[in-house]
Length: 362
Image: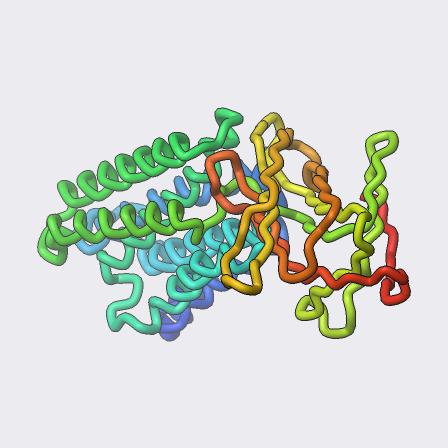
């Protein structure tokens, strides 16, 4: 009991910085323990975190009404905001881990910006975690992100319809929690304008959907693990032997690929997908016309992936008679959501003297 009292006194003394510390602790812990969205352990952890966050919000908001006075929960009231921060940090760290599996960092940068804003929001707002708009707005964001992962894994299908279903479930569950707490807590009713809060949640909902449809957020839970421009790909006994031009000292800025006219050029990709999830993807080959400045489609080749392999589903496409100049290959789903992009510049080399080739087995 003495130790608990000392810890409570320490928390009260550092109440301004403690929530941020607990946020970072949650973030760091999951960075070290979580790995893949299709692992049962990871699924249980993020489910527990979301449920615990919901419970913590309920306990924290009713504490202002002395709901827990003269109950065993009263002694833990100082820890409720810390629990909120810890579980938000834990959920956000899990999402960063899952998103970071994508090679195309530019397509996830908007999500990382949101996470950074979320990380420092408590320092920017005077009331910090006691700000109920911040509480419920953040809750909806992590709730929505959770269901965009969990529902596709649960039903072994992912498409725009499933994304919309995930958003609908998240929106409904958040509004139910908000309404429940609002009805139970007089202090919450005094501090909150319910219409204003619902409008805030709807704005976040619309923003995430806009990000999704403009390809600012990748189609989770799919992610591109590897993307290579190769001079040869051979498949034998379930393994792929890939020969590619080794990058220079200033990789990834050195994107030149030597090419002998008449040869084939390959695009090799490895795409992560949860177990039992099947999806058709495309390699969309595009060449930049130096005269018009426009990207012109050369080929769009489709193939199916099946999830469950830690290293990702491997596949390749190839072209012959490649034009010299700038190229890009978008790796997309069949509903045109971008998983990643491979940029390279083809330089003709009929002598094969400028190649620094390396062979790797996948």
